[in-house]
Image (cartoon, rainbow, N blue to C red; front, side, top):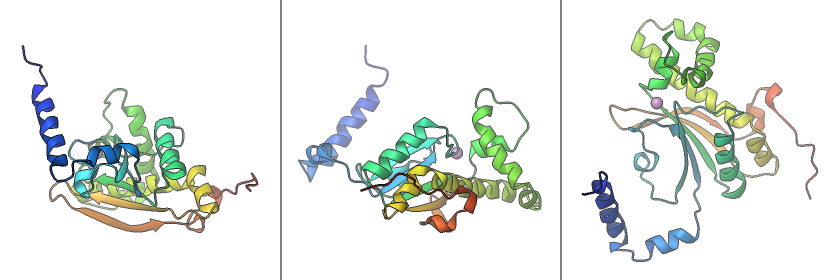
Length: 216
Ligand code: CO
């Protein structure tokens, strides 16, 4: 009996062979170290694959994905990724990439229950409520949904910057810029939301933290 996922193993063997055709030591070299300049925080949506969208090879982008690209300061999973990427890999850019038509964002705008995931979507619902005035002023539903996708990205960018991980990196003079992008499912293109955060002065005072630990 053939393995139910045999086609995936076949794909993998073909891919690995293809990668080493022109560069026989490709995987050996990659296995010794990774030096990505970018951390990608994106949606788990199967249509938004990080490497493919920005044309990067394995080893070039560190990736964390969850439903609706949410950064929560009590999420040990996301925080661990950010800390490793910033402190150890020393990425220079963190890209929060959401996408239009995000199911998580759209669900958070509704009042229907979806099960356990509602507890995760609450974070987006809070974003929605915080910006309710701006959002409700948009008459067209599709435009309103698109704007909530964008606002969610901007809020998650801020959440990353509020972490001690990012603020300590800035304090020790490490170059680190946080970007917000939105991906279009219908055209495959990313759009920069036009905000780059690379210093604590860009954050609201209440969230700026100084490091009381003296470093040598
Ligand atoms: Co999504």
